[in-house]
Image (cartoon, rainbow, N blue to C red; front, top):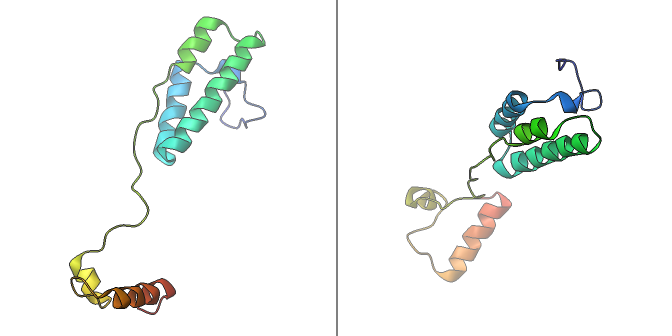
Length: 113
């Protein structure tokens, strides 16, 4: 059995089965970005494979424990396009002249606009 008080150093990794790795996957997927969750699951699979190579787990149990689905998803890119109302609030019309656009961009970047 796996203790709730176990840490990464005291956890008997070879005792993890498909149900436990699926539970780990769902918690990691809910808490982290998809790429981070994918990296963590890859590390978990690596630990399970190392347990197999050390003779602590049989191949069938390792295969089932490692067969959790990948975390799918996308991240919203940083930043966004401003709406016309937001552009008006910072002093833009629909398309300001080039010099004015740079001036407004600098005001916003420096926190003055």
